Image (cartoon, rainbow, N blue to C red; front, side, top):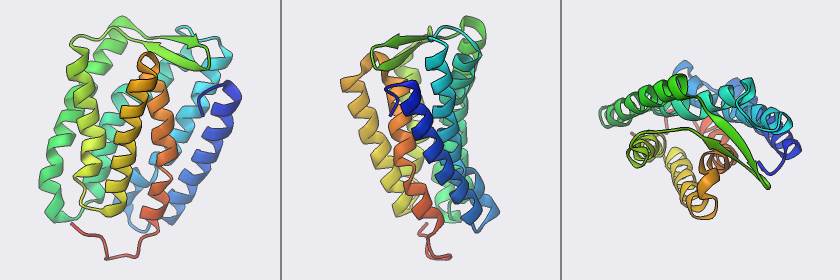
Length: 207
């Protein structure tokens, strides 16, 4: 997984390949943002391999990794779920979209104003960003990403949300200082579920 530059590169390449398959097999245009999620997460892991090779720090790879992990994902995931959802589910999905936009705005401001640093901590990477009211921001982040999947009304997406939630708990307990890095890896691995979602029979998606 993210335990070395090589592991990140190999894992990220495999996940990105699954993402390409998801995009190619998506049957509806409005499914494309969510279908592309494994491709985004796989690319994210490939970028982290560059963070490893640079020894961490504040370089370009660290910044690009942080942009994807922090302000981009809490907007991408709930918007992708909203676009792919059936009409009856869309009203409730507006809430995680709004939370994601607010959370992303704060994270983008903190990245621009305060910067981010990557530290190599044994076989994991830690990303240090000075966040005000960090418990509130983390809660908003998880409500936007995990919450939107759980509210989607689709069994496959709900499963993805449950896997992401379980991964978040495990990473918070086991790798508190490296939470964002390890959770993104587990979320990327879990996103193989998206391939099954893309291949679902058309017209059989619950609302």
